[in-house]
Length: 106
Image (cartoon, rainbow, N blue to C red; front, side, top):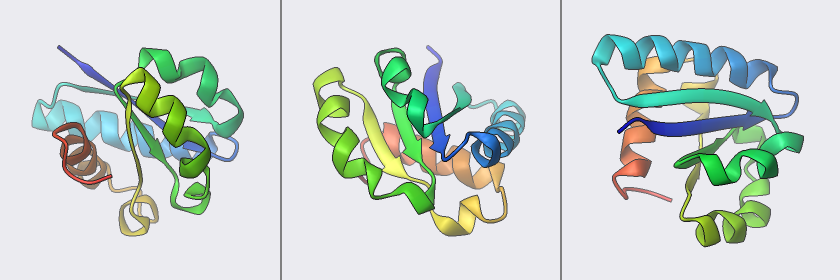
C-alpha cells in the first residue's frame, strides 16, 4: 500500500521542488511512497488523507500546533532536516520519510 507523505513550507514552492525530487528518488528506489507539497495554510484540509506530515525546517515551530491533530488522526509527523531540504536531496527525503513511517524519530 502506498504511503502518502505531505510536505509543507510557506507558500508551497520550495516544498514542491522537494516533493518532485523525492518522487523521482522514490521511483528509482522503488519505494512505495507518494509525495505531495502544499502551503502551510492548506495543511488541515489534507491531514486526514496522509500517513506522514513533513514540515520544512524553517516552519518547525508549527509542529507544536499540528501535533495534536496529527496524533488524533494517526498521522506521523516530523521536520525535514536542513541538510536534506537545503540541497533538495530527494533520496535523503525518501530515507527520512521511511524512518518516520517505521516509527523511528519524531
